[in-house]
Image (cartoon, rainbow, N blue to C red; front, side):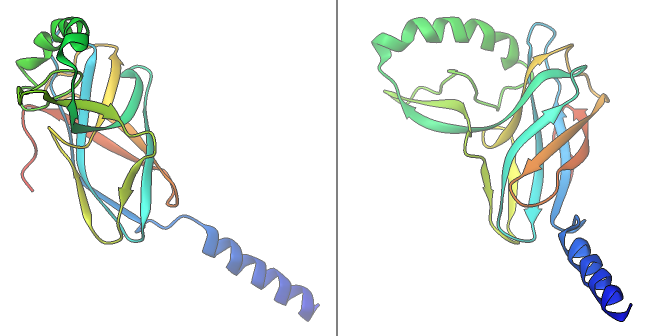
Length: 185
């Protein structure tokens, strides 16, 4: 009987050690920018700090908000201007609608003119590294969660739940509030 209690106690300790850690990831200042009526794109931002090295590998949102959520970054990329003009014309038509309310976010093939360099948005298929005890900011013009195929435009005061998936930590679901500007830290 004593041996069985010891085994059960050891199993309980192992299970407790494998359980979720509420302090593994801290998320603050979650918000999403309002979106114009004619667009189907949106973006969510927040500050995230992991207790241990981790990777934000994905995000999901309710299907009544958007069809898909992806981790994105804005990077400088060389462009062959002759080959990319047709693609840019199509993307710019879509982007013109977003420029009014997302003017400081550079996404799609929307570019700042730096010769043959452009700022482009791309999915981070390998995830976003989160160094231990360092705050990583997802913000306009940088890392962000891209919301694709919005069901309806995001309006000031709206709220939705966003679930973040990590390589090591348990999933975290947070409430995102739609606003014109980032919340005060």
